[in-house]
Image (tube, rainbow, N blue to C red; front, top):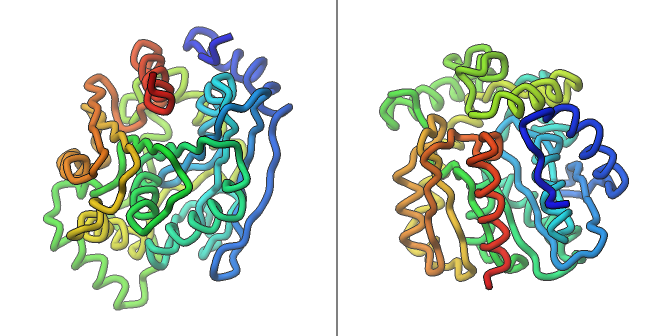
Length: 319
């Protein structure tokens, strides 16, 4: 078995083959963050591990989005760790409305991940690898820039160095958020965030695979904990300012492990140029383009996804 799932009969294969395989190797737990909050994580054990990979999910996501990727990594002999970041999934939330995603400071994500790496992942099988997507990519690079030394190689897939602003100038987007926060609306839904049609209509989604889009939509609908939809004003402001921290003078130059940045050619969620700037400044950085992909490269059609997955393994285990 190669660990690949095909689009044809995708849901049947996920439910009938992938989920039982994952369930037999799944452990769940919680870890304590520096501020005392508890976050949830999933750990899958490979049958004959030759290493470990930690997956850092993106905005409004959860561990269950990465079932197919975990299945692939397990077949490649990698133990898999997936923490659910605060404000997501089954982890601590600041707000009761499960549709909202809130953070007080982006640095909390980084502190949380540092604690997870030290408390949980450090005991895993070496070598240790990191895979991150979108918002998770921003967390991953800040962890590495601030001296994180656990991982041997890291992948940033469509990292949120700078999010798309819907045509607004950066200064205006920041000013709107700061004004709302000053009026006590930091934990309120961003006014420009409408019901997310990307969850409902394939043509407006960030995916190119109808089968994968439909399957994850079903997963999200099955549990309220997976139904994050909207950012708050504070989360939005933090996302707009994180690029300043990531690209500050001297920061990327502190990361000396190999880092591969994947840029999707049809990405409407994050800006591509900051990814190129980051890749150029990393001492061992490289940028790879996936022209046919949208923001969710992992939910691409087979002809795009399967070579992408093979490329991940070649990067983690260079010959």
